[in-house]
Length: 135
Image (tube, rainbow, N blue to C red):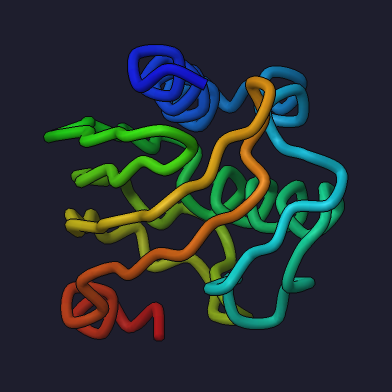
């Protein structure tokens, strides 16, 4: 897959997160997704694991705004640097809503095959989530 095609897939995934568009999200995730950094308490892979994480984020942060700061792609692999902003107005990791706003930075490494994300590994600035009391 060409680098520009990989970037388009990632941008569509980010747009789906920002709009809460589960169907677009599901379309972009491979059935056999390998997730090397799943959300705590969520299945570590497959389409169901991805859906579970997506739903948890959307429920806790329904006004989530995701900005792509940079995408670097080569072949099947891509790295994306993100800024995520939202208000925790729903339960997150078993903690009730705080109605506090948070902004975190994250980096994800993705492998994309035939227009689908087949592998994910990522990190976020967990210090900001500690401030929120979310972790």
